[in-house]
Length: 105
Image 1 (cartoon, one colour):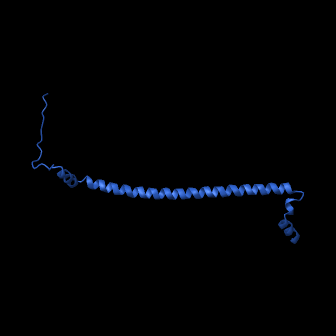
Image 2 (cartoon, one colour; image 1 turned 120 degrees about the vertical axis):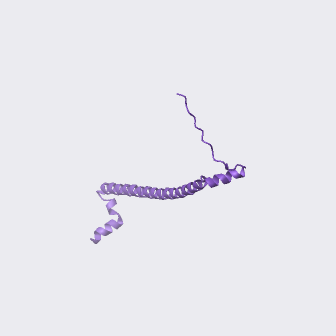
Image 3 (spheres, rainbow, N blue to C red; image 1 turned 60 degrees about the vertical axis):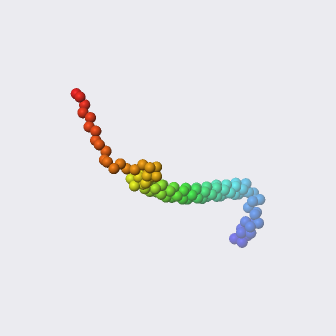
């Protein structure tokens, strides 16, 4: 057991008779580790991008609610009358007359 551990620590398995098989396994394991690390980095960047986009969605939603409430206030009759009074336009004191047109058939 001790001799086997010392052989591994000294690297004798890399120069022995069946070394090409060991080298191929080491290269394969290194390739898999590289693919795994790249996949992990890709997943992390996607998670950060999703979090950033969710924050933008929250900001845009709150801005939409603010603009919608401002619009509802501007559509009120009192707001329209106040804006028109600045231009010198006032509501009519007399109600409108209804015009009835009878067709000749």
